[in-house]
Image 1 (cartoon, rainbow, N blue to C red):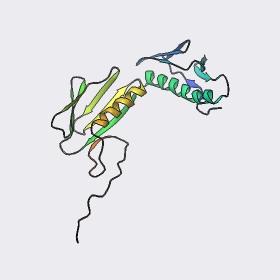
Image 2 (cartoon, one colour):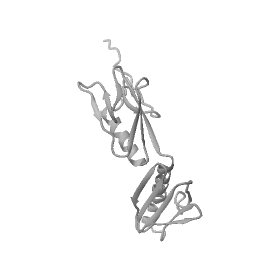
Image 3 (tube, one colour):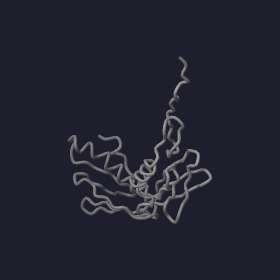
Image 4 (cartoon, rainbow, N blue to C red):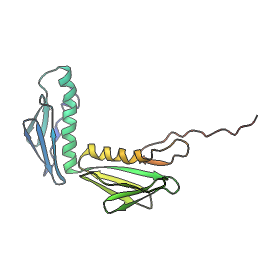
Length: 181
């Protein structure tokens, strides 16, 4: 059996999970998420815990078992606590500001880059530390939005300039060696 799939999911106080066919709906204090799960997987609730069960030991069902449990768990955590990722902006003259709800990034281009937040995503900016916090209840959207911001100016290996995750380590390369013939 899947090690991830067989673990029960604890439902925190104030979180409701409802299944209608293969549509999973989770409501909590931070919001509501819906997701269509694979029809082979069954999601059962019993005394504050959620269990994901698979119909057989077929390869496809074993693969979907852990995935389905992880997706449901991410929905439960999202509506109760939320998710966030932090990005750092490194480089001389690189800066970030919040204009309304969208980001205004100066990343060494001839023009500033405006980045509007997708639905369900909030930005928190610390202009002194040049950091951006991307927050939301959908883990997938938070990660995708962070990746799109990072893609505007990925960190380069020579000086380490660019947009990077706070826990990311950049492998630095040596520059040109001083030439002498």
